[in-house]
Image 1 (cartoon, rainbow over the protein chains, first blue to last red):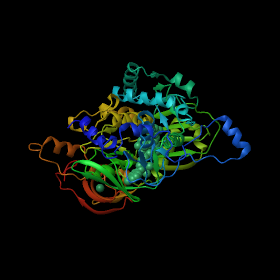
Image 2: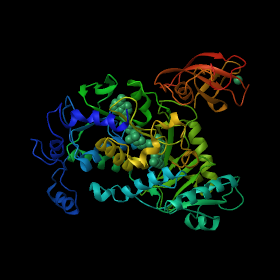
Image 3: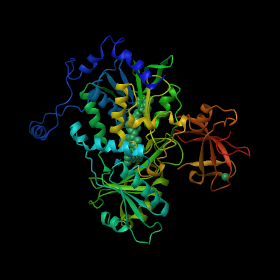
Image 4: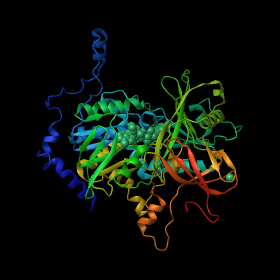
Length: 454
Length: 91
Ligand SMILES: Cc1cc2nc3c(=O)[nH]c(=O)nc-3n(C[C@H](O)[C@H](O)[C@H](O)COP(=O)(O)OP(=O)(O)OC[C@H]3O[C@@H](n4cnc5c(N)ncnc54)[C@H](O)[C@@H]3O)c2cc1C
Ligand SMILES: [Zn+2]
């Protein structure tokens, strides 16, 4: 059966028979008096000013609801991906009888733990086009969500310390340019101008030979993105259920019929797995084996100092990257821990290795103090590319395999998965990421652009 | 980081080892179907809890061995050397 037939069968009860409502009526729940208070007033400078005087409390950013016994779409995982899918389902397609379930709080997974790098200078044309769409959506996201996500397109530098990485960067720059992405290889003098504190002499053990420069890349306020999507989805009628853990998924003759949670059962014809680091556990519930292993990725942040670092700096060879937040803290990251684990405990190994590599790049930082370190779980795939779309179980969809690089893809994934659900068809922009590629041998080879510089 | 108990060298820092992977039986390439071969190459249980996996003592004795590890706590129990001919992923 083709993906299209599968999902059209999956959608039938939603749109007609089971609920007894035509598809139109689902669309129309948006903004209609359902007895509930409509979501949010718009945030504005005037509102801020007014509440400053009146001391009126701010309304909660999203509301709590009772668990309904059925939804048209159940999204498992309240990270940027799950929330964006719900948001676009409601706002672009009028499908609002949707819930997002999270076993903990919204943003408790990778979405609240990442280092917030956004870029599109990938290596494969499929990857480049996909991430570029996300950058475009991010550029307009504050306005769309009426929530300041603080997207700062300050430029992104990937350093080359040897000839082979310089060659990969040239290759990436050419692929990027063909896709109309601002991306080019620059030399040490230009690097020095962008980041004066970098040691670009020939002294260091790993001299800087050049860099891939990507001006539209940058960082964002990751929590704000999560909260903004949650608020937007809530406003349109999506139910967000925190502390609601999926413990089982019901399947009957090859198709999904609902989920079991610690708060009760929900029937639903469509269940979306958007649980990143926990993706295998959810897919295993329906017997869909994933080409995924889960490894922790660690990061650290220093005490705040005066702004001096205007770009994101990544060094693949040194397994380190850094940026400075608007508050002045330096955010450091590295590559994933060398074996799979569901433990989010930080290690001394990591912070030692990190410190020595950072000092290779910027000796001037030797007196900086680390404020804290943490870890998040990453769902790694063999080709450093996501797995999105249909699975052999009807109505069970996946948006997983986000590894160390999935935050930047939140908007485009939400948009594409919502489109897939509404149309019963895989949109072209995610065709290359289907689970089938592991059967047909069409893996994507994004490692050269994704293993360190997330 | 954690200590990995090499059956030959005793407990050593995990950074001396290479994680090889979940223990999976290699199907016979002459008779395996495409699905079996794909499963062997890519599909993993990736469990949360106890699992059996292969490790290689890269910076030590150079032997392959299996351990049972709890992927939540990283606690290790039951360790055994792989047969001499064992290579990556074989059981
Ligand atoms: C340290 C670090 C740095 C990173 N840096 C970057 C970066 O710079 N740029 C970038 O693009 N990406 C980065 N990433 C990757 C990025 O964070 C993730 O790919 C992305 O956040 C995944 O989002 P998600 O919504 O799919 O999953 P998550 O945000 O992980 O959300 C999954 C949710 O599922 C919930 N869940 C799990 N099991 C269940 C269950 N049984 N029932 C209900 N809910 C469940 C969890 O509680 C969790 O909230 C980084 C990751 C880490 C850890
Ligand atoms: Zn040994």
